[in-house]
Structure formats: C-alpha cells, structure tokens
Length: 190
Image (cartoon, rainbow, N blue to C red; front, side, top):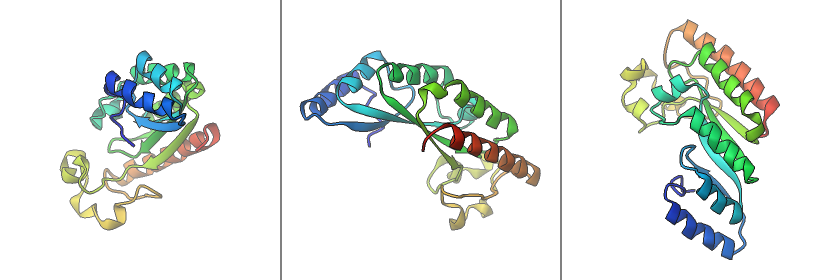
C-alpha cells in the first residue's frame, strides 16, 4: 500500500522483479500522474492485476480547488495505457467537496461515461473534513463552519453532514449526489 511505488522507474524495476521472481499477483494504488509506458510495462509483466486511483472528481475545477494536482487529460491517457496492457482500473470518487454542485457532478458523470471502457470498478464516497487534513485545519478557506466539525462528521461512509454552503447548496449537492451514485452503481462494479 505504497502510493509512491510508481514515482521512480528504477524503484519500479526493482520491486516488480521481486514480484516476477516470486510469481506473485498483486493490486497497486498509485497517483494518476505517476504512470508511463515503461512503468506500465513493468507492472503488466510482473503480475499487476489492478491499479487503484484516487480520481476524486471528473471536474477539473474541483480537482484544482482540492489542490489535487491531477490533470484529467493525463488521467485519461493513464487509464487507457493500463488497459492496453491488460491491467484493470479502479477509481475512488469523492462527492461533496466545497463548491460541488449540479454542474461539477455532471462533469464527473460525463468524464466517467466518456472513459467507462477504461474503468472496471468505481467506489463513491462523500466528502468529509477529516481531522488533520488541510480542509479540517483551515475550514474558513472552504466556507466551513468550525462548529460543524464534530466527531459525528468524521466518517467517509454514509456521511450526509451539511458542513458548508447554504441549505440550497446542500439540497442541490444531495440531488446531484443521488444522480452520481445511481450512475456509478449501474455502470461499474464496486
């Protein structure tokens, strides 16, 4: 579970050789911008069966707001490349980051639909400002009321907490979440 495992080609070459020598199959988690042809070739020949990516959103605007430093065009290239080598892809999605709305959710659905032939599995979570995270430590930068940061809101499962924006923003976001959830559940395996 080393998300930096693919950041250095020499490192990848070393540890994939160990996997190959031991005939081990494995699943890998990494960044969407930490893959290239050479790295994927090592992964494919050494037993990698699936790569998990924290995509979070198909909205470049939200990715920028999250400081994710992920370019969606590069991500498309990455998942296309891995499928060319026969490696499955799983994406983790996060909905409800401050600023999420119908438009950003539609962008995510559109991105997923456009790339569904490259994505085998997807899991959808709701945004949670977890203790210690940048958002939790600087809630005012995200229009989050500090008094709403309670232990009841520290779960990524079934989190319906309203911690930012107006009631209208929350209602719009929850309607959009339902649409995204339905799309993910009917299009991808978990």
